[in-house]
Image (cartoon, rainbow, N blue to C red; front, side):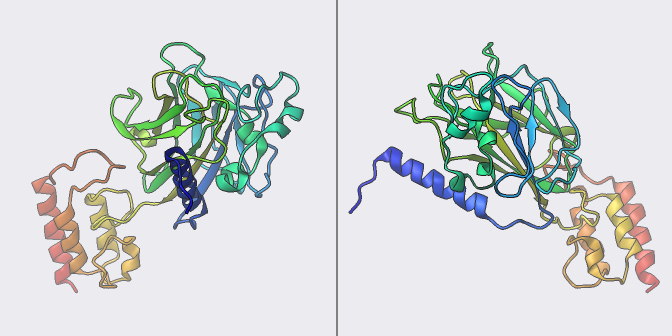
Length: 332
């Protein structure tokens, strides 16, 4: 019988979880983007030559730039924008390729040691894993960036690959916040960028994942990372995946809130096919009074994408719309 050491078991479980995540079939309305931190124009950096070994297209991120309309893996422009909101530095030294030399990136990249199969889409290019972004070494060491132009009707999954040797902090913490004050946490995940016992062993095969993220204030995800003990954290590559948010009862226009606009959709499609309600109806197959009652009972509901609280419906609005709804039903 094989005996697993605790650290070996942890690594095996993390790898298995990563493979399940990376191999999962695309969800409805799925969208996928790949970001490489470091570029030909950055210090000891290298851009990804797209398409990569998996046929995917990447965006290589340099410092000091704001990138609009990032392309997805099929090279189709999206509405998503990217920008750092703190000082950052990129490098490849003591990353997965070891002690790299400025001006020799084209040769050093072939020293990049990763498990491409375990990393899935994030392992499709050595150049993507080769370099990384971190703080500039000034206290505080947080690196912060914003993913803007997101769709409030979608949920986002962020998959982080960080890898470095001889780090002060073996673990990097990746977090998402509600706004640019970075004071209210939405979710966080940790990743060992190097072996906890042997700092010469960098991460080859493991990722950190944050799932089910709703766009926050101004349809933005506010992302932060730092070493677990406050020193430098590392990020080599990032995968962004978007899928349609689950429908909510009474939300007929898919904006993740139940309000007066949904009544208009119900009214305009009365006695028609329920598919016009975007999955927010009662399941009868026809737009009818049951859908109206569902809308009334859920009026004011919000998902995390639309806000953090659910206001009570204004009585006058409900009364006016109820009368209109009653009139519509009487005309059937």
